[in-house]
Image (cartoon, rainbow, N blue to C red; front, side, top):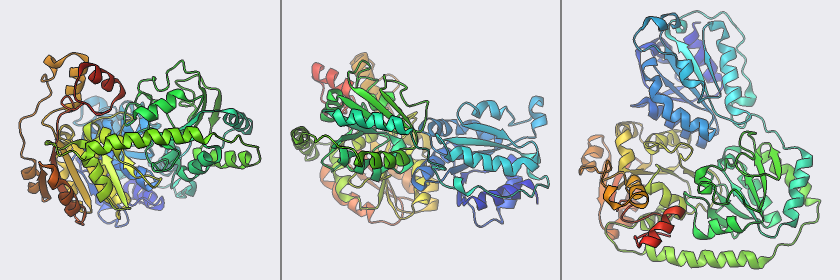
Length: 572
């Protein structure tokens, strides 16, 4: 058996069902074997960046490592997607073929030092120089990707090695690492006791969940823990879904991307803040103002990664361990201890603030303005989407309103945002990954017109692979987020610099790729078109005309203050 066939056999034994990629000359020996391997489906994409984004999303929804592959010529195109997965701690196997390594320094076409390219944005980069090492490299890649602080692992597979015969019969796999988390470590028991003592004496405790809760699948444990201690619970934008947002203890998303006035106030007023699976990054903390770096609150931080726990705030108790496993132990220990009865008046007060804010939101969602108010779009999505759904969003206007106003009522992986790196062009390829990870879901794919330009070619992939994937394009004829930043940071005289697009007939583009397409310009069209789209079992495309962000400032804390002061129209 040659090494190409051996790699596919190893992948098959690890339960790999789909690989996202596209062809190139250096991968053809592998493809030759692949053509007769029906168990592993190759999902052809139109850009290598998209293969990485699709694998990233597949991993988040399937809880197995996402697999993407690229020929040597496309290795550089993978970087945005691999970097997002690395910063987000998403388990992935990144496979690149290559020229024969010994020709790299002779300027052979498509050759470069791939190891140098990937070793800083993966947990490890391995090159197959001896084909008898291939089984060990595959085992190591799955083990590293799914264990500890998870992340992508790179395998570099030169074309000449793909055809070499393999003699190593050590083909066993390590079943522990087919899914993630591969192993669940538990924080030190004495530290758990310290954390519980602090929580037991707290007057205004708040729990903040990051994406680590979703990766650990710890949402049930979070609910039990919060109810046991009477903790108000917020999430970061990437952690949205860690806690049901209609729960009496929920304060919704916190920070600069999706946070509200009441949720951020709860964090800043807390006397104890416990982070779970949270990197305390700038998006989740409004650049470390929610809470401020000199907060008087005592900080407890539970995270699988020693790099993240206590990384940004003075931390009272470090809990290094898996969220789900550690919360189970915390519950067992806590049930044996006498717990302080929380004042219900605090929770009632928060619920009153939420109710008042909801009235304000309702006034926006009932708007009949044209262009259509983004809050109205999210309200209709809340009502139209069925129970089994996925909401995938690009950064920008679509993400900020979805994070703030879309309510995840059942905990679990329901939404997808790429706010580790935040690069444009994520949502469409990510929706393809979700389509294969969870084929029964109705997918709402929210895309800005700025992002659309990055991955428009993937509409062909969306059309080809089919499924209930419904793309909503927010068209404001610009890089609207940058227009708002120009306005609020430098003045209105700059907003047109390097931000505006000429009008584009997006319906023709979508229809040219074989998608059913609609355009919504008036509010009274919105609900009927969305219902019709989500009743379709095949992909659809809907263009919605909205204002750019400088014309309607979205709910970003620092922007709201400036907009309020200057009298700009904004959503608070």
